[in-house]
Length: 332
Image (cartoon, rainbow, N blue to C red; front, side):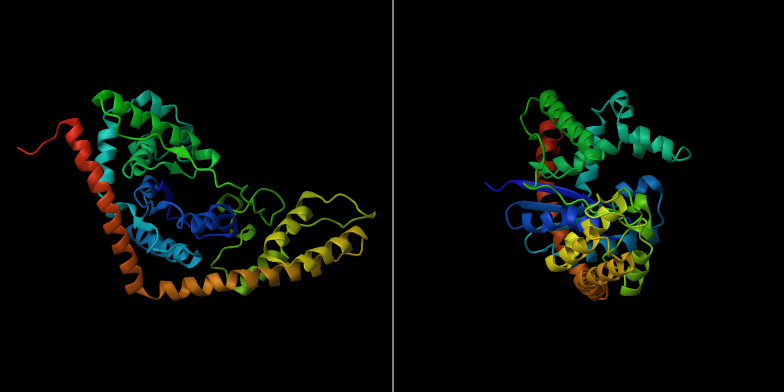
């Protein structure tokens, strides 16, 4: 029997090289081997009180970007979280058996309290139960998670097991962290430290929607040092980061050329940046053009969303019918 994998996509910001070389390439491959559910987590975004315009625009943009990157709506189920109200119903049932103390101890809740002290809402407190509902509604076997989400996955197992014990049914499986089978590529930021992402700022991150002139400007501003002073000198972190970026977008002979220039102390960082920018533009342009084409095709986006909604509701509806029966809710 084909195993089920589930992953959520928060509708904030644009995809960047870190996303692509992190999990996204693997998602594209996984959809051929697993029963995959990819959902756009617009309900989760309500914890920060976005406007209707933000939600609608971001959902459309994220959907277009993931389709452009290779997710296939015929092979995987790609849906908008709010299109499947069964998730909210399971969220309610799980909340009835979640304890305030365990939710308050969640690391992400503590972090959010510090980050947004004027908006400590109940949605932040019960975020783990909503995430558990997302996972358990499709009885997922595997969930790709980063280090910051491991505790949420553990809580999903806790809530699922608690439901099983309370109602005397081995109903929900224990979802496991998904191992992609290879080490994910970490894409460094252009500011010389850290990795690409919104935490490092837009100027240090290359997005799949960036136009050539934007990429060139960002790469020109990348942090460097004064240059090597002796042959085969170890690279400082900012320079090693630039070569790491070349490793994912440039040809092997290009990388070798600049490594030799570095090792014999004849490297010119301006030339390195120019080449890196050109190679990034060559890599990003096809994605950007596909994203623009898809964004312009409202009918296609609507068909994809409707197809995903129907497939997700079929799975979620079955779970909710069975959960209601297990709990004891029956039609009179």
